[in-house]
Image (cartoon, rainbow, N blue to C red; front, top):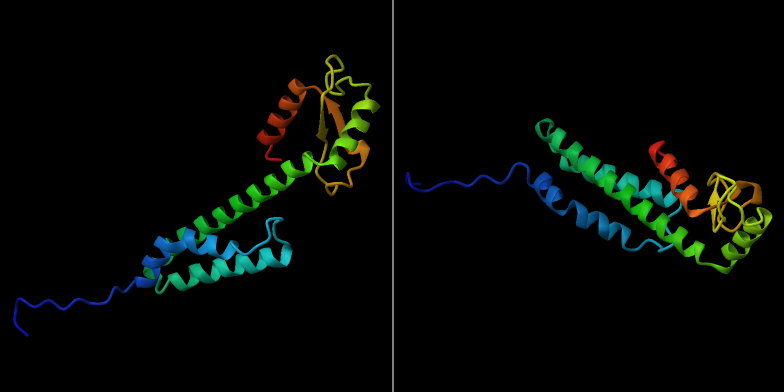
Length: 163
């Protein structure tokens, strides 16, 4: 071999490198075959295990473990964002259903269309006090008739508290 020839060593961190580049697409592919209605607890456990496995395989040696942990963290965050998005879509769909409309009318009539938060304005919306009930099976005491202004304030307070 002459002095101008270089030997190119294989990339020692090829798996980490490819996973850092392909991680979001890999996760999207994993989630592509899930139901639009979301996933249950066993499917969630499966996806979480696959994310951990994917990140663990990227950490081929101790030197790259911190970077692989960043990959794991990013994939877990993307999965959480995806679950939140799916849940939000399901909830919005439910709020357009006939069942919700019937429940909503019952709550508004119970309050004589007066806001149960301020007691002053006309109630036009219904707020879930907690989200413990299953959709379509809400207990009426767990729902409040509210005006749009109070609903915005209640929702803002709940978001600030991380609910």
